[in-house]
Image 1 (cartoon, one colour):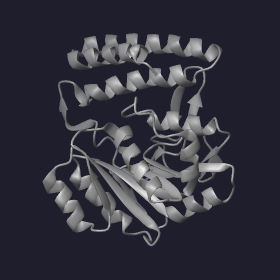
Image 2 (cartoon, one colour; image 1 turned 90 degrees about the vertical axis):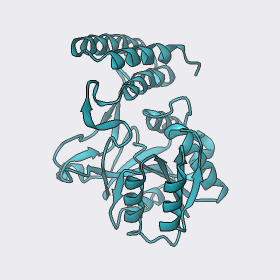
Image 3 (cartoon, helix red, strand yellow; image 1 turned 180 degrees about the vertical axis):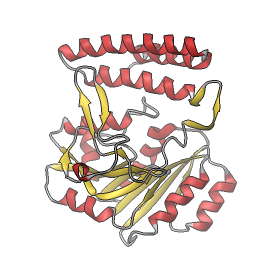
Image 4 (cartoon, helix red, strand yellow; image 1 turned 45 degrees about the horizontal axis):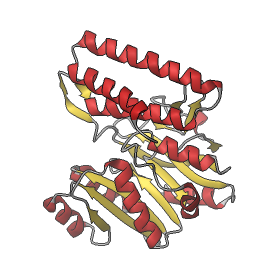
Length: 299
């Protein structure tokens, strides 16, 4: 059985669209688990009425992506799911996306997790994510192909350094050894951390472009209307800055640890200077808080 876990946070419309697209796949051996952060009775009722076969877990608080996914993962393991997939609720899947991913996982015992080719929903000819690489010098997570026109160079299966939590399919046995998502992250970089922990077990992560999905991008972190702080929320900057520091503290090794921390210091200086120039006081404050929390938080 494949357990597909979606996190909903006050975003019924996108979750509804995603669930509707999931009807395209054969659901004989599929279980869909929705973890509803800050659950609202009206939306929960609509989800259950429209999709009676889903497992809906309502949470009073916003547990973040990590907390909600961990609840879903635990439920999947209790149901003895052989495979677990994290899938963003602002994605639209294609009819044949699941079988190629399962075929990849079953092709070798060394392969533990796989992701599809992910394209922008509003620009379906452009890549959002074709796998991830880690740049050791500054412990940065690079997205392969980001915003590039989809072409044949993105059509080959390959081993990658990290898999995006937008669509992360793995064997449930891997979770027993690697553990759950690190809840310290809340959101952003938690997928990088999980990927690196899995790779530390000498398990391969693979990108398979035969499977495709479309991502609406930024549904929970971007405003549709430009504010005085821009489109991206100050909290998103807080989490990105703090969690990049977390990744560095947890995974940087040797001389790369030194160069990465120097990079992070220079990065925050540039961010703060930019926000001063643009008059974005909230982003200045949240970015500085994120930098300080990145080093103060016990990991």
